[in-house]
Image (cartoon, rainbow, N blue to C red; front, side, top):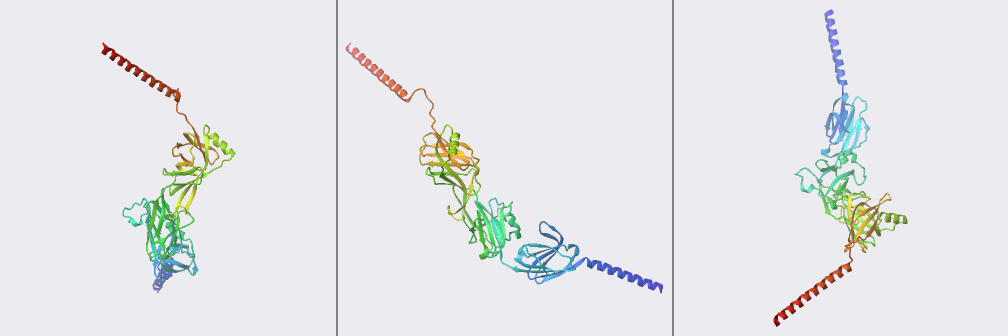
Length: 440
């Protein structure tokens, strides 16, 4: 009887141990219920890689949802994102009936999980039309890049993106590529995936010597904004994937004169003075103060001051149209390299040597060598700074030969006269000699 009793004790002990083990095992897992009306990806994990990638157990679920178990060690974070391939936009997320903030409606949202025995994740979303825009900036490395996506003589990038034209909520942070303009730095390929109705801000920058004179995306206009080289594309009328039709036109630097002293001019910034767009030099008359007159004269010692001018340089960008008046302009006081400038004066200067006096921004003056074409009244010089200038001149005499022009001309006349007399004497002697011989 004692043996039977011991046997039952052993069985009870074994069952108790099994129950403890079973409870321990079940305690290591917790039930998860996911309810959704749209395709979504939910990941539970105990650490995050990068900025928002939760690593752990993943559920890819469609409506109406799914359930399962997750090890409690992974119930630290949960990420929720709509299925980007199905164009799902998240509209609400709840964790155990607590509403959560959606920071990325079309991206990944990461939340800390509260302590609980089980978790219910409720997700709602909408399915929208979504498309892509592809383009390729100069320097692209893929030889198979289609011709219709290539941008030549300029470059494009994404600056910002808003949800729609009505709300204008900035959703740039939810679209990772916006941080680098949505252009691959190595391949120079551009790509943006957008929902129909998004408002995308692009930047188009022409290379030096070019201007953007027209731009559209699949026929949709891009409207210029206040910020230089930025254009807005409203995609509410988009009907498919797209690319840009962007035309960059070769354009020259220009001189605009409002001066009574300068009638016209030529500007050349092709040696790297600016890196984009074109330059415009504005020329105005300038009346110096008494102090400035003294500084200009001292700097141009040995020269006479002919005229005073105010020169201003702007970097010009067209607003997507072939119009040189409605433009973006940035004032430049210093260039990356010298600008080559030629100014045609209304009246010539009374000299054959010209110099340019530049009043620098620190108030000091410098003398810049220049050249002067008396036939065209054109002064030419090179400079990298812009403010007040003076044109100075002097006359350099030709080297002295030791005799005046009248003296030289008189000597030549005397030589010619002597030669004529000598020749006449020779002829007379010859005639007399012939006559004598004949008489003999």
